[in-house]
Length: 89
Image 1: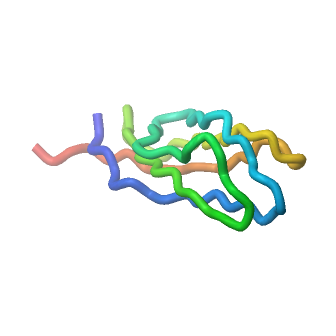
Image 2: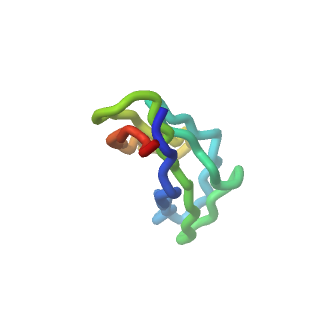
């Protein structure tokens, strides 16, 4: 329905001393991933996910980005929000 957004960057960082296995990422709501991190995040390194908003209706909608990994803190979740606007004719 609405126009998709430009990608927004979400950065994952490994502050630990051992590599983290990245086991995938999922988004909910009217969001999609256009870039994901590789399968391993080495100690003291960062990687980026690119999230785009693809509205299916007008108004505000929420979603989440969940990054699955084997770190001791478990999966990480990022709250997402976007506002769909009617396209000009």
